[in-house]
Length: 152
Image (tube, rainbow, N blue to C red; front, side):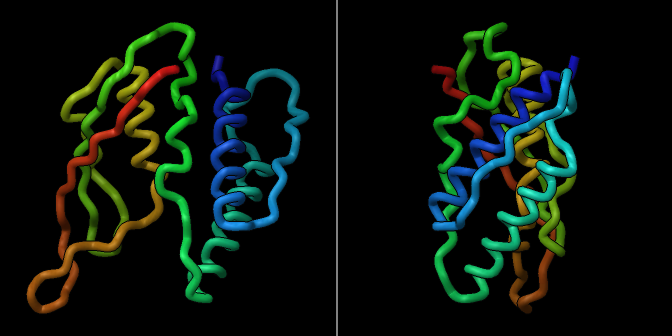
């Protein structure tokens, strides 16, 4: 079973928080899918593109974009009822010259559930700004990022 309904609701809550923080009009559509799913569908993808487009419009207009720490009070683990563990997963990854992310590895984990969720978070981040050498040219660089899981 995919536990997709829980993932879908979590992602909708994150989109709603981002929209509210950036004054973007958005109301998530209620999912009418019967049974379990993988947690994403064309409607979810459309909502995500809408939020991304609105954020890009605000960014191009010179407005501040707020996305940091908005999801900090959401519980990411789909199997929360199975575990009461909390702690920090340290993830290492490479930021490529074009800002894309590759070579994601868990350096220090908690368990497979939390480790997989940390990898999922990194895989779904937007492109980052690559490091620049002294000549101003981008180069690949490795980063470590701690992700704190605190189950309430």
